[in-house]
Image (tube, rainbow, N blue to C red; front, side):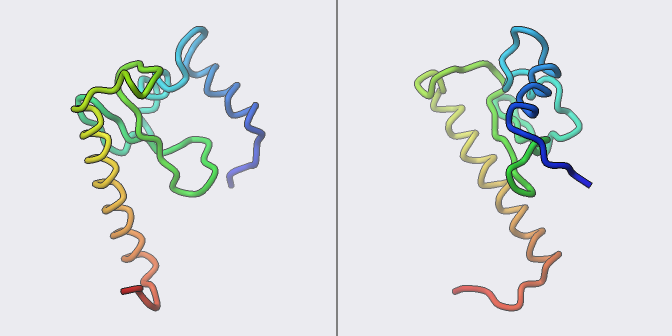
Length: 105
């Protein structure tokens, strides 16, 4: 059963896993192979180890970037493509598992 921990505790644990002086996101991309849902040459989709809600994922570049302006057009396109791909799969899986009583049209 998951336990509720503080934001500080989660960040401390992620920092410890990433290693001293390492970017937290770069550390996740490098070390979270167990939670890796899909990956391309430029982008990784990782299931959050410290989610705010069930099924939360992180879509991360496979390289270090600190500003949106550093993201290339190709990377933006890949972020969008993998986001849509993951959300489509998640939606389909949710529909199969939960068999909604009604759908909105």
